[in-house]
Image (cartoon, rainbow, N blue to C red):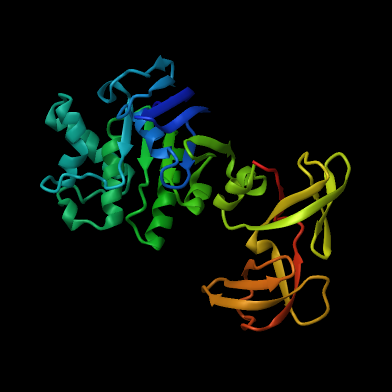
Length: 351
């Protein structure tokens, strides 16, 4: 299956006086999965619709492969899209749903059905071709929608919040299947979600959107470990934001005063003085009792099966903590010593 690159150059999309997308530029390499991540209203779905040709930009240019598609209609683009609602025809069988795009484009029915059977095999639905969508589970319906997109052999495959209608266990299973399918077939995939864990799990690269512009883009590990600012730090997983003071600096490291503690952290080019750090919940270690430079009191505790979640009141403010020690839970009111692992405390540049 062929795969194409995607390039946005200073793209804007206005609805009246409101900018849904404001001067966005990026390049997506062929055969990669790139996720557009951000809160509702940030512009990610508008970008996806402009790639599909369902919306045309107000300014800027869009290229898919070697072609400028800025003003090209959706029907003339080599792009398929899997919608959030799946948009299956309820009165058609699975086979007819998958082959629909081929038959309306003029392919003989027998040939279209042969290709549809191949697409159903690819997504693991062999034998369900004569069922109606109402006779399928949510996960099976999602696979039918993917097969219907794949059968057109697009150069770009788009997903718009594809897992939002599924329960937590099925979401994990389906995101693994989408990632496996993308890698196995060498597809160019653009994936829209507001779920950070979903984006981290499936993506080669993530583009974080905020208020119609790109807040940061990069590999999942880069965005999690080196967020550009407090918004990205908070959106790429949980983060406790705490005021601190940067003092001594060398080429890369600096001393960061965090209440009664001093940590040595990458200063990321910031000048000495007041700063802010982000502390990941899993980077906080709690020990019941005993003296400590930084102590606290457990104010909330919740058992989540594989982990415990705590809210701990400390001299540097309340801290949200994720702890794997479910066999030795701390109770509300317990006095604890608070420490931080070397990784997971991040100096945050101002925005």
